[in-house]
Length: 219
Image 1 (cartoon, rainbow, N blue to C red):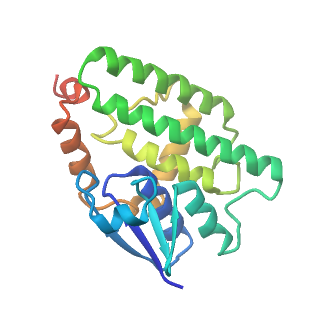
Image 2 (tube, rainbow, N blue to C red; image 1 turned 90 degrees about the horizontal axis):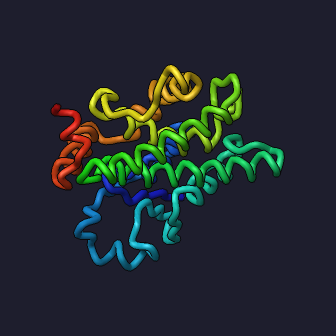
């Protein structure tokens, strides 16, 4: 079986799949495209014109949560809780993390302080909700590392850009989130799930969009 991932270099949803692939030591190839100018062959195989897309031999999978569940299921299924209710709750929190990633993107790319504060406030409230959900760790579900961890790790990676100077995580009020994020970011599969130039590319995208965040960083 041949696995080929189609990616964009700063996409957090692709990063979820790469983390799972590396965590499970699954062989795969990866091709990076420019989403601002996607090739015709990509538009033909991606129903939503989004990454990630995973080619499984000649078959196509899309949507990061679906791809991750597939990768887990073909390699033992240990990244999902066995209990159906716990598994369903994990899926809900993975969707919650996706919403947070959208809000983080909007915050980082906002051009003025009104929109910046709007999305920052949203993110802080969401992060506080995650803080209440977390137990004693070390992972989202306690001792078991799951797809919920792979879903949140890209959020923490993007939040940590610029030495975390723009982070929405307050260690004083979100100590569990802070500790969880640090553990995730220290994992080799998370560290190696982005390209070497990830931070430069991310900051360049913010600069291109006239990001208010960068103005705050420079102040």
